[in-house]
Image (cartoon, rainbow, N blue to C red):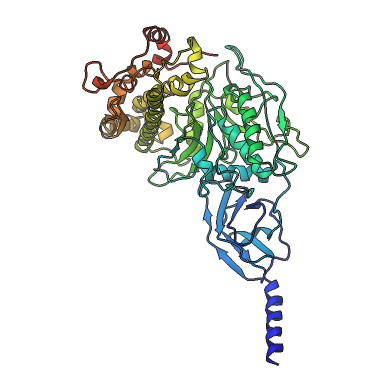
Amino acid sequence: MKKFIYLVMILLGALLGQGAFAADCIQGEATRIWVVPRAIKPGVPVKVMAVSTASPIAGMFLTDPQGATRDLPVTVSTGGMPWWGIVEIDHLPDSGHYQVEARANDDSSACQELYLDAVNRDKPVWDEAHEAFFAAWIEHLFDGSVDQDLSFSSLEPVLRDPERNFLYDSLGTHEDKNLPATPDCADFPYFLRSYFAWKNGLPFSYRFCNRGSATKPPTCAAAIINTDFVRQPASAAVFRTVSARMMDAVQSGNGRTGLASQETDFYPVPLRRETLWPGTIYADPYGHILVVAKWVDQGADAPGILFAVDAQPDNSVARKRFWEGTFLFARVASSNPGFKAFRPLAGNNRLLTNSELSNYSLEQGELTPEAFYAQMYALINPEGLDAKQAYEAALTALVEQLETRVKSIDNGEARFRKNSATIAMPQGVAIFETIGPWEDYSTPSRDMRLIIAMNVLIDFPQKVRNYPELFQLTAEQAQQASKEIEQLHAQLTAERTIHYTRTNGKEWELTVADVLARKPAFEMGYNPNDCAEIRWGAASGSEEYASCRRHAPAAQIRQMQMVRDWFREAMRPPR
């Protein structure tokens, strides 16, 4: 009798437990749940990400084969649409049927069934859900506190970090362990897109483009559509081959194509927060490309921030904040710059045309630089800018650029310790576009952006006087605020410092005020054949300069003098 009662209790418990499963466990219209690894094994850790285009993720729950439901500790995004939440489950101990549910407020927004020892995979098509997942993956990949100096020697440590990379080892073959990932500026967004496509069994596309001319932006050939990842999970070797072929094809011209062109990898989007998702690129007029990474809301005591990440010719990767010194915008005939999104592939592997895109817009092509920046700052700070906060944010952004330059010059010095041979310098405008050691270790493009950034900071008080409405000030208030900014500028630039490594291996401290005073030296500081002291503007005969042991050839110095006006005027010639 006792045995019979015991069996009945087990049966009743199982029947009652079944009631805990959702009657219709389906993905939501605006929320989707993603699970890695693809094939879940008993005892193996599982990661779950819920992504929503409707509302923030409020909670996530797991129902086990016995019908017991438990609340999962979820890490949620703070950057706005698309919203996401991530949970990590140590392991699923039993084979069988599980359910994961995501909730927004008190309502279920999506449900995903999990079966151990089976492939959990959605249909591989670039729909809005996959685009939102791509955006969420990018944001999580480069997330960090506002004050964190987020920089890496290359993309490799980012992708190899399971705490950052939600897709780490998602194929279950240890495919990320030794995966090479060293894209440069132009390759960077393509590498991220193709990596995401590889892990999710999606197609991706790219084109061969030219660099345009002085009178027209670049144009491109027909798209190459790759489906190597679609039919079955591809090995790391296949991805390496495919990505190498892609990176040999793309270059900076791919991002600068005409806004109205249909034969492009990217298309322009409206300047609205709901369309500028992480993963959107920003292509500047001269070929540099950044990838939007995160929005930070404006607070009562802190300005809003739009973060982006970029890669440099030396393959280093760093996070940057939006401002005039980083996001260059100009109306030039040789380029159509701006925020752009990857052109999506329809279910039949056909690229959508401009008329089929719901968020295609030509508005950026109609904006002056002043209007472009004003509109972006209004998006980032919808409550208006506080002049002092805005100045301090600009100063912080400049320091970030200087810190990035420290690493770039250190990389050049490391090269010369291994190989003392002089690096050849290309002629004319090719100093910005060549390949090889000059591209890897020189800094002409970065230094021109740095000079622009210095000008923005120096001219900030005048900006307050010229655009009082941007700071919600009257003309009279702006006059007083600009004087206060001038005082703040003198104080903070004397306090903020950077440190670079001299030829003798010792650090040297420079205040931001020192750097600003040396601005003319940066017009000639991009040649890696010069020692670090020269590149940081040390005065000849000074204690700082005394450790310098390497100088660029006289012929290269003459070439640099011939094009110095480009840097003095902070205006790169059209290509």
